[in-house]
Length: 346
Image 1 (tube, rainbow, N blue to C red):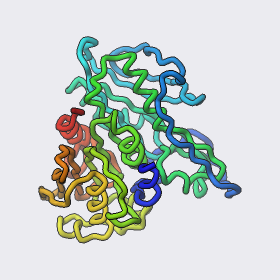
Image 2: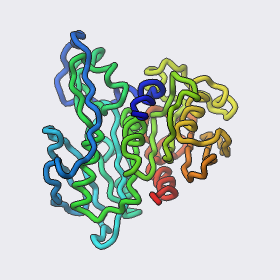
Image 3: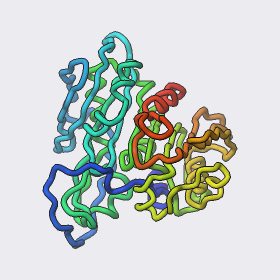
Image 4: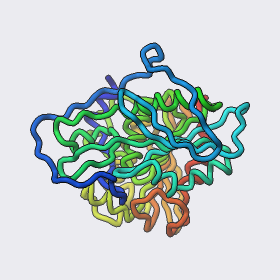
C-alpha cells in the first residue's frame, strides 16, 4: 500500500518515448481513446503456484532465451563469462534497455560484456513488451512504469514486468551459481525509470543496488508528503545535453552544470531533495567537480543505514548509456560496477 501511495503522488519518471531505435513492427496510425487503460498490480513470486522453474541449458558467452511468464513469451539474453566457475557464487547485473529498444541494443552498445569478462559477472539483458501508444504510430517497446498508463492506448493490458524479472532470476538461480548478495540492476532511459520506480520499490529485498543513465526522479508533491523510505543505494547519471529528457519534460537544455546552479534549479534541485527523502538520507553531501562532471554524494542516514545516493551531471552528454566514447570518456559499466561493489546485501 505504501508503495502505491508513493507512486501515485510523488514519482514522475524522467523517461522518454523513443531511444533512437526502431521497432520491428510496421507502423500504423495512432488509435483513438475509447476506454481507460488497465494496470495489473505486481504479483509476488509464489513457488507453489508458479509454473515449474527449471535449469536452462547454457554455454559460456551469449545465451538467448524465451520463457513463458504469465502466459506470455518473454525474451532475454544472458552473458556467462569465460571464467565462470560453477563452484563459486557469481554476481549478476540486470541491464534494462530504453524505449523502443531490444535486449540486443544493450548487449552490443554497452560495455557490460567486456566488464563481465574482466570481473567474472553474469549479465542479463531482459526485454520489455510492445504497446500501442496514443501519440505514436505502431507499437513501441516499453517497460511497465507508472507513466505508461498515460501513454498507452486505453484498454491496453500491461504486462507485469516485475514478475517477469522475479521469474527470470529464479530460472537463473536454478541454472547458475548466483551470488544472491550481489544482484544489481541498471537501466537506460525508460529502463532506468523501470529500475527506479518498480525494481527499487518492489524488489529491494532481491537487488543490492541500482544505477541508471538518462533517467531520474522528479515529483509533484512536497518532500514531507513522501510516505516512507527505501533503504537502497542508487547512482543517477544525466547529461547536460540530454535532448530526450529536455523534450519529454519540457526542461530547457543544456541543463545546469555548476553545483550551485543544480541545487538552485527547480527541476534538478527538486530531484535531489525528493530522491534523498525517498532513500531516507540527509541533504548533506560531498561534492566532486571536474571540467566534465559535477557529482553529489549523499550517504548520511539519520537512522544509521549504510545506503548511498550519487547524482552525476556530465557536461556535453546526450541521451545515451555511456560506453567510453563520449566527451568525458565515461563508461557506465566501469562506473556502476565500482558503485555496486560498495553495496552488496548484508
